[in-house]
Length: 280
Image (cartoon, rainbow, N blue to C red):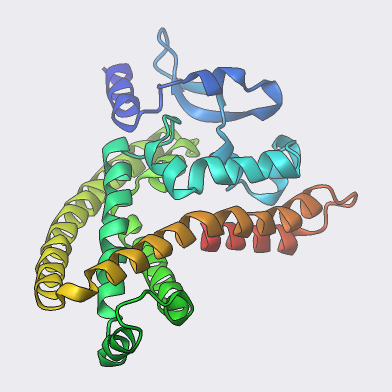
C-alpha cells in the first residue's frame, strides 16, 4: 500500500518521466535522493536520479562544486534552453511544468504586450502621429517600446508564480525523510491546486480586460492601429532578443565561483543565482 501511494505521488508530479536528455547525462551529474521506493521493499532507500540542468542551476554552493562540471558555454546554453520565452514555451524538454500552461503563458504575454503598448498612446502620441502624417517614427517610439517591454516582463514574472510548479517539485525531490516527504507532498499538492485555480481565474479576468480595452481602442483610434501593431511587434522582438545578451552575465560569476581553488566564493555564487532568477 505504501509503495502504491508513493508511486501515485511520483506519477502526479512527473518524477518518473525520463526523456532522452536525461539518459545522456553521465554519472558526474547524478545526485542521491532518499525518496524513491524500491519495488520489493517498503523502506525508502537511496537511489541515484538524473539531475537535470535546471536543477543544477539551483544547487547549493557545496553541491554545485561537486556536481556541476559544466563550462561557461554549457551553462549559458542551459539558460537559453530552459528560460528563453520561445524555448521555454514550445520545447519538449522534460521540466516540471505543464506544457499547456507554458504555451498559454507565451500567448498571454503577447496579449499583455499588445495592451500595455496601447496604454502608452497618449494625446501627445496622437499629435505626433498627426504631425508625421501617419508615418511610423521609430525613434519617437523607442522609449514606449522599452517601457512596455520592462512592464510586461515584470507582470509576466508575477503571473508565472501562479502558473509554474517546477520549484515545488524540486523542493519535494530534495526531501530525504519519508515522513516529512508525506507531509510535504500533501502541502505541495494543496499549494499547487490553489496556485492553478488562482492562475486561471486571474488570467481569465485579465484577458477579458485586454479584449475590452483593445476593442475600444481600435474602434475609436482606427488610424493608429498600424502604429500599435508595429510598436507591439518591436516590443515582442526586443523581449525575445534581450535574453541572449542578459544570460551572458550570470555565468561570469557562477563559473568563477565554482572554479576557485579554495572554494571560498560563496557570495559570488549566490550573486550569480540571484542574477539568474532576476534575469530569467
